[in-house]
Amino acid sequence: MEWFMKISQKNLLIVCFLFLLLVCILCNSKKTAEFAYIGLNTWYLNMIPSLFPFMVLLNLLISTGLSYWFMKPFSVFLKPFRNTEDACFVLFFGFLCGFPLGAKCVVDLYRRGRLSEANSEYLLSFTNNIGPAYFCGFVLGQIYLTPSLGKSLFVMYGLPLLYGLFLRHTRYRRILDRELMTRRPEPPVIKPVLQCLPDAISSALTQITVLGGYMIVFNALRILPELLFTKNPYLYLAGQSILEISGGLLCIKTFVKSTVLTIVLAHTCLAFGGLSCFFQTTALFQNTPFSGKKYMLHKLLLCSISMIVSYVLFR
Image 1 (cartoon, rainbow, N blue to C red):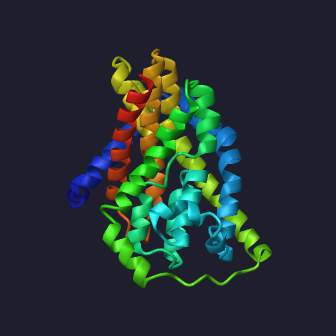
Image 2 (image 1 turned 90 degrees about the vertical axis):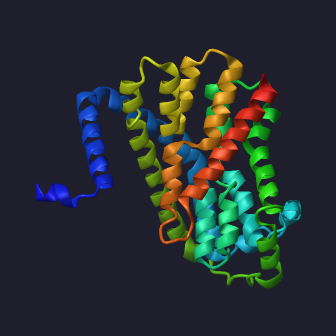
Image 3 (image 1 turned 45 degrees about the vertical axis):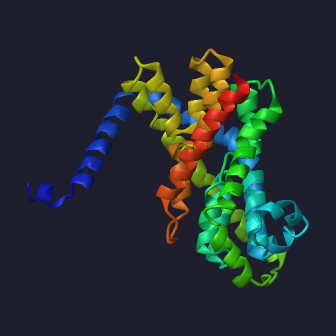
């Protein structure tokens, strides 16, 4: 029993949980495989076509140094945020391409010295959302038919933008204003596009594969609420939605009959993103000073705001 005394209480709980998870998977292998297939299918049909081209383009712009010049024509539209060209690039691509490229863009530019720690932390708080391609192609097409596309887009993307503006002129106003006066990085050295293209593609392949792995694993974990909360539909929906966003949205579509409630719950889940998205994002934080707790706090705040506003707009 000497090994038992050496292991910490936290690690002991993790070992017990993993053992119970293994038992659940082995005893319900067919159902677990069905859940895992949903993750694989969603990744293959929705995520690869909508994200991979953007991943290659994003990697190429950053590695060549063209990201700085890319934003010059668009920075005039982002003047209310009063930030650098590199930060505007994160804003543009974060909202255009969606999760996880918003966070990846921040981390890449921070490691290249283009963004400060405070500015990176600020951008992470509101730019890493579900992308328009996924939202319009998967959510609006398969989860619900919106009575107003404008209202749905406002909840999805208008609210995070307003949240970012609020933080810019309150919590981060002094520190970012000071940075604009004292620290503006020089334009980067431009590298040849063809020289950077192979690395951009191979890096994008790695990123999209990791994304698929997370989607498959966390969809397989949906066996837990399937076993624990089958008799309680509210806990069942909560458990499914918290684990993985795509599977949670499909459960909302299946079990919720009210159109308004379907829309409200869908926007709430989309604002949070699920644990699968959270762990994919925090995996990017390795060897950086960024906090997963702060990121989660901002996600929960946006989740609450989205739930209230979507209820008011769609009731």
